[in-house]
Length: 114
Length: 111
Image 1 (cartoon, one colour):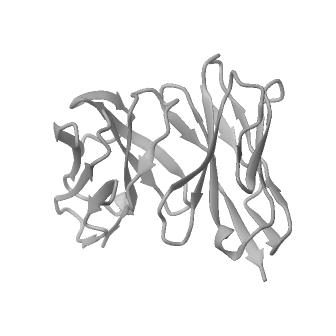
Image 2 (cartoon, chains in turn green, yellow):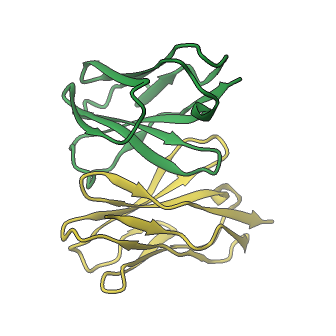
Image 3 (cartoon, chains in turn orange, yellow):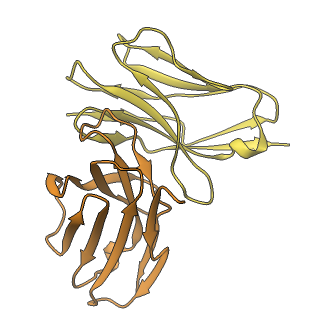
């Protein structure tokens, strides 16, 4: 009965590969997010979707493409992985699309690019 | 632009004692919220407490309370009766149309 789940929890891959991270929330929320936490623990928003519509797209390389098949799912696909993509990626959800609402985070996916 | 500053990279507290973590922020928005999240070694981000900027009363959740000084743009977190399970990274965040996080404070609890 996990509220926000992500798969996989760990991902190790070679430079140049393409990989996807999946996220699902069972809270009935309308808005979902992807965050990147770097090696210094700095947490920054990448994307936000509200009811399958992209509403926030930070300055992220276009190798990163989010996809929302329905409002309970938000997946992150990364093409041509680079060493600098190594980080922990968090999915989150909230009822409201504004940043004033409480966000509930998934357990994170640690991506290591070799 | 929104900014959030946590000036204490690391803090230590003796078990059962009280500790205060500092956070300052800057925003031009009039409607915003402030949050403290905890990230234990499991890396799960957990909401500790949130404060609505238009409310003058400081938020409290059991052993956790905030000191919200709106004019000074300060939002500190006080943890009373510290427990070993409080050891974690603590992140302050301000929210308008998106969250902006501070760089975090690592809290160590000494037995």
